[in-house]
Length: 240
Image (cartoon, rainbow, N blue to C red; front, side):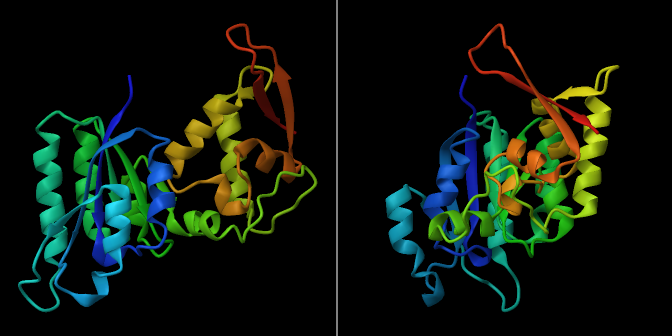
């Protein structure tokens, strides 16, 4: 069964340019049956949203700024999210913002059994990032849009962005999921890494998938095994 998602966008904290790539990314996780964007559309700086809203069938929600310095958009978005939650029409939410004010909302939605996908810029505060099941940085989508950052697929490629902290995260996750011989199914490892660090994404390090990223590090053994249920082979990894 396809997962139905409610996509709620904070126009005050998200750039309009990567919306097409953002919607393509969201489609990987479910069917965006509800798509709403919140802001004061009387303000000139939001005019650039007009074309992308029409092209992606996103419904604009008008929210006037009642008081200078206060963000009424946040409140409108939170109220709508709770209304949608109690309609039982969706299985998850995608919260698009770089604002930490949505941290409590993400936590509350997860407490209700919803899957929560977050999308925002790298400046997004950590509390909001870790409150989501998965968090995707807009900068990754911008790279896809501009096609200016080539994806590394060569096993010999090295990436200085892969810090010792990231390597330890991968090593510990392999250990946590490994059998008595030290081997762990890569799919399970990837899922555990995502739970430990929702913002983890191999594309942040220039790799389209986790497998070539792990190969490039050179600290792991990789083994392909036959899959009795599919023609695709299963990939297992082990700490060297």
